[in-house]
Image (cartoon, rainbow, N blue to C red; front, side, top):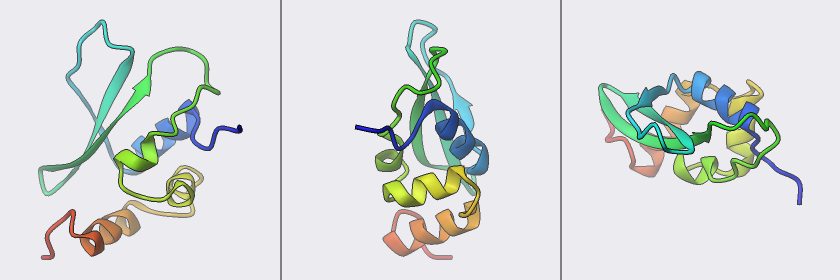
Length: 97
């Protein structure tokens, strides 16, 4: 089965969503990335620390509460942080302003 979200794509998603690295154990196999909106943690996901860029990160879309397609589009720059925030508001994850 082909990987939808690779390490490289997960890193691009983290950058697009302006994720911040959260504290984690140095022994952990993952860097934990937190996505904030108005200083509130909305979602978090792990990115493996290993050097294999083709390792699967197919958990990312579940953690950021979007479809695989939406997550991939975040990574390849056809979706924006603003579109993700709008989707989170629509789903009730972020309270409406």
